[in-house]
Image (tube, rainbow, N blue to C red; front, top):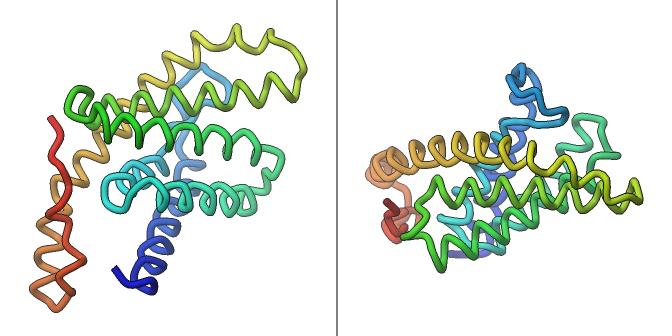
Amino acid sequence: MTRTRRLTHIAIYVALALVLHVAESFIPVPFVVPGAKLGLANIVTLLVILLSGTYDALVVVALRTFLGSLLSGALTSFAFSIVGGVLATIVMSLVYKRLGGVFGLVGVSILGAISHNIGQLLVAGVVVGTMGVYGYLPVLLVAGVATGYFVGIAAGFVLRFLPKALAKSAAAGWPEDARVDHIARMP
């Protein structure tokens, strides 16, 4: 893939993730857990891991987190978001590459959501200066399983229809390297 094409793909991924991030702010969260969100932008992160690799996913997470913090006006939450996002991306990438056939897309997503919550708790522990925040972990684990399940199902749905859409685009003149035939199918 050429450098220009790769940069264009990253820009599109970041834009999609930002749209989902902003749209998510309008959705009332059914969780009792303060601060819990569905994590719709993580659908894009998971797809980027599968389609483009870990490095591109980390770039997308960093840009989306920074721009999302700017757009929402919540720059104070940047540290929480970036640590959680990077940790989740690394865990999802490792699990996908080494144990993807065992966990499947939903399992990879759940582990990413749990990792994201743990990363945010690590930052909270440093900011607050007490280990008491880790008492919140069981509640966040349950929330992580629920949101990770949803994100995994949504990403699987997109992946199921993406090759058909890209095949139609290829027939309409897209270059050969824009196809996703190389994606390993997960149970």
